[in-house]
Amino acid sequence: MKRVLALLFILSIGPVFAENTIIAIVNNSVITHQSIEANLSKTTSYESKISIINDKIDSVIQLQKAKSLNIEASESDVIGALLSVAKSNNISIEQLRSYPEFSSLEIEVSNKISILNLQRLITTNVGISEEEILNQCFNEFSGNGVKQIKIAQIIISEIDTQLTNDKDMAIKSFLNKLADHISKGASFGTIAKLHSQHSSYSNGGVSGWIEVNGPTIIMLDALKDNEISKVYLTNFGFAIGMKIDERIVSSDLIKCKEELIYLKAENFYSNWVKDLREDSYIRIYYDKL
Image (cartoon, rainbow, N blue to C red):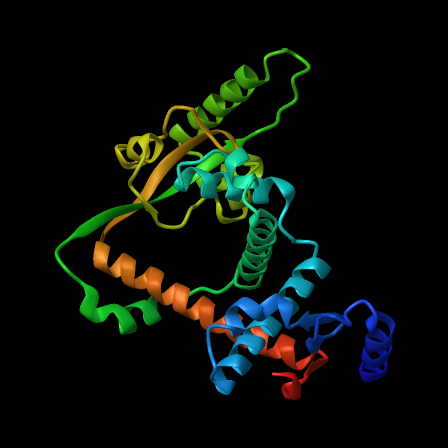
């Protein structure tokens, strides 16, 4: 069926692309010689040309998938990226737009952001175990240490304000009451499960390991055992918290872990793209190279 559709597609667009040779078909899209001419002109090697076409095919199927998942680059994302390009070249966005190649640059930026969105989505759950880290990074330990802590938080973003028009004040007052209960012996974890409005509530408000960096985390790190913090503001609402554990981790170990996660995610995504390619209709016109 895919072959029939592809044939109909070729017949229907034949006159449009008569002046631009079709090098390959990828599902319902075509790759023309013009679209990869700049890269093809840099080599005379047949193997290199095939590699360029395959890279383009991989790009097309990823963009098709990003479109089907509705995670293509937004207009604001593209504008933000172009502003960064202009800034890095010490020119205004108006000057950048005046360049003859701007349209091609805009498309390239949009495509790269779309593929990046797809990579993030597909590799979201790719992680690495503590055992893998120790096995792979054993030789990366050094005397340079970074302090990390685990905290538990109760975060409130919404509250019934029938008795007052000041929502923030009502939230702070409620959190202070909860802190008082905990100070008198109530379980922080139980209170968090009952009242916290952050997704961490299911785990009693407990976080993963956090590097001690920034005023809020430094404040929480300074708390004594079982001491409840004053109310503070987070990205998710007002909160109270307590420090539940701490450790010193080698900065080299952290770097090694980040590299391992990156490589694992990269390998996972590469295999995923191969599977995506196997499920696609692809035809390369080798005789037109």
